[in-house]
Image (cartoon, rainbow, N blue to C red; front, top):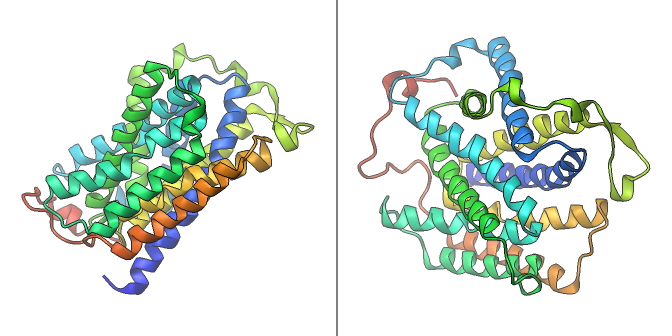
Length: 327
């Protein structure tokens, strides 16, 4: 893996973190308008799947072909990475302070590193473990864990569940991104996520009335009102299609561990955006924590991990059709 390719992967993840950071505050606006967390997750997945389907049909319809051996990985990617991680995250922030929820969710990079080391037998360098640990300490400062000791049990379980799903997203996405282009991979992920929600929460049971209401953009933009559906559209286009697409594209160039570690900058970015947009206070401890997170990411990146193109011991090969998929 060339240095230029690795740099491209890092840039993709950083850009994805920017979109995800803004998306956290936009999601807060959508939830405040009366859209239920599960409905927002379903709209996000279904809207992304429909828009991406049109894009793939126009640009390269042949990329929609999938092999039988790809199918279970694509289903798992869609259910875990496309559906459950969003629903569990929305559930967690509904029951916990946002910072605490993000701290627990972003234990995912440690889960990825542990799985890669224990199951895939990949060598994770000492600096990488150190960087993850330093970043988690920084996240604890950003989340101000000492301010909320009586945590809701369901919220904690949801946040750790989101972490496990996020780890699965990085690992499965890394496997699949080597055999399939990021556009069709992102489409299939959200297509299966949309199917999941269509079964779990049929559309005729969903109250879509809140989407037609005017809602305030809150905080610094409190004087501005927009239709609630427009906030959901932003979430679908930029907080979902663009952000997830960039992450999956990055997994073609860097390892899932590296992708997860760099992604730990997202809570820091979310806190900064929430401070500037929603007027949420950012204390000196939180600012210090943000710098510590960035330092931890730098340490982990200097340590490096096994490249994503390395074959996984005992991995089941994908179908010839998948291996020949255009990139």
